[in-house]
Length: 114
Image 1 (cartoon, rainbow, N blue to C red):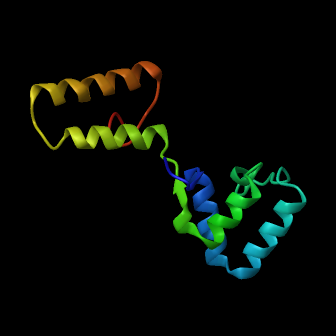
Image 2 (tube, one colour; image 1 turned 180 degrees about the horizontal axis):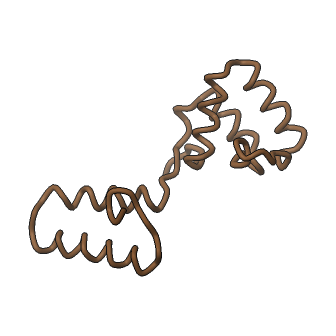
Image 3 (cartoon, rainbow, N blue to C red; image 1 turned 120 degrees about the vertical axis):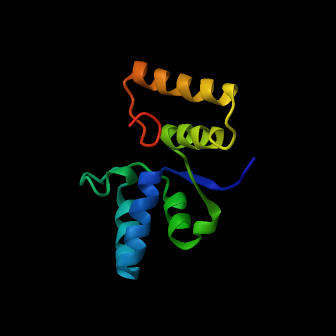
């Protein structure tokens, strides 16, 4: 089991953009988050809402200690692409089943059924 903190893909994207903006954006975000971690209401910062402050600080200053959580779509696409390495009946059935299941659930995943 990993000791790394886990953040979502959306949180990671926000943190990367704040890092690119510079030190003042990072300090402002941390200060505001310390005052109220549920304050974020703008769409671009909403994924930070309720995030643990220690995880936020770690993401800014020690990104190597962070794991970005894969979305369900990412996990499915990874499995689907791995099945393309070998052309056989089993893998064809797997891919067909994945496409049918996603269609039944009404989900669209780029690279699988979209």
